[in-house]
Image 1 (cartoon, helix red, strand yellow):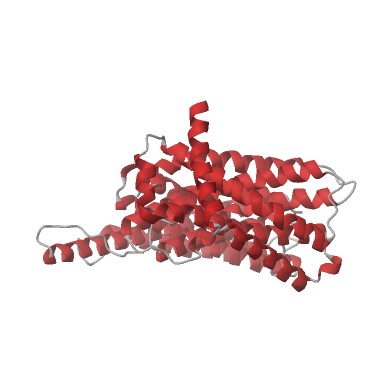
Image 2 (image 1 turned 180 degrees about the vertical axis):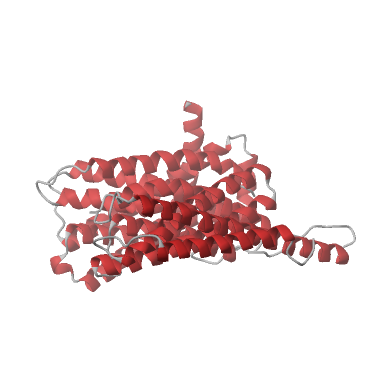
Amino acid sequence: MSKQPTLLVRAYWAAAVLALAAAIAVVLFYTPDEVTMGPVQKIFYLHLPMAINTFFACLLVFVASIGYLWQRSLWWDDLAAAGAKVAVLLSSGVLATGMIWARSAWGQWWTWSPRLTFSLMLWLLYVVYLVVRTSVESGQRRAVVSAVYGITAFLDVPLVWLSARLMEDIHPSSVTLSGQMRVTLTLWFLPVTLMAAGLVLARFNLTRRIRERGLTMERRFHPTGMQVSQGVA
Amino acid sequence: MTSVLRQALLIAVKDLRIESRSRQTLGLVVVLGILIVTVLGLGLGSQHMSGSAATAVLWVAYLFSGVLCFEKTMTVERQDGAMAGLLLAPLDRGVIYLGKLLSNLALMLAVAAVITPVGVLFFGFDLSAAPLAFFAILGMSMLGFAAVGTLFAAVVSSSRLQGGLLAMVVFPITLPLVIASTQLTARLSQEGQSWNGSAFAVLLAFDVIFLVASWLAFEWVIEP
């Protein structure tokens, strides 16, 4: 594998950055301010696509975890790890944008409203996934522990959502958007999704390369080709 | 079906017999639970503790003592290659899970049987409105908690790991259970509160989902 990013990768990231620039331009110059909340409402166009992509990243962790338990190939484990890292990144973004919005809309950074609580619990679930990975040393064992956790965590998500709803709600349950706002929102899905998918792929490729490098070095010292899995978190 | 239950009971009874002879876990865990209740009670100022605060304190005690119980029942198998023997026995792997679940559940209920009265005494908790409902909720919560704990104890304990990893893994997963259970219990202590159907549904769904999922996953993850 070459060290330089391929043309395809460069074109991909160029497209993602262009889409982001276009989306920012649209939000600044085209989209109208919301009547009651003012310009702060525009953070919503970043907030919602990140939230949706968090869900897909969690789904990826779930599918890759099942794939690992089924085929016992570290390929799946690396995919799950890449997905979880991006899930944590995205849900951190969701929490941060949500808190900024809450500060201006309700006057405080944090309330124990269902959706905030849900975002926090989801963030915790997947942060723990990453912590678990760093605390198990051997490759196969770590993969098993992470896979079981990845599956359980995803099964837990609907329950977390339902249990968070047992609390009282002040979060806007349905947002009414004008036509221009809807266009902006749709447009924002493009860069966020491109970047999330790109990050997953980049992380995944990096881990694969480290693993391959580790294995080739291992072969150099053990000409029998004894494969020792490397510590790639 | 009866043979499955009999085999699971054999494993559970074996675990409990080891526990009754070694007395390693239960004493430690019960004292730890009482300590937690005392420390939190003192810290929060037990004079005016609301129902939900009292149940939350109890849950902290259950969670920590539960994790210790799950760890102990699995470390028993790690000694002297007992796990290899258990896996070689002509049993379905799901039955091993069921047996471990039963012994964990028995230990947890024993612990709860001591910690809960202590909490009730300390915090002046009024259970007279619906004692049966309280025990039903507690039993269901313990079942869900033990279902997740047993699975992860099997996964986590098999390798040399840093302590506290089991707690780290089980706590975030059990959050919905804790929320649903505390909501239900807090309502019981307040007179005239309506029955919270959706909290009960979450509790039930948690039990069913994680019993089935853990039972299915167990045979993939258990190894000597």
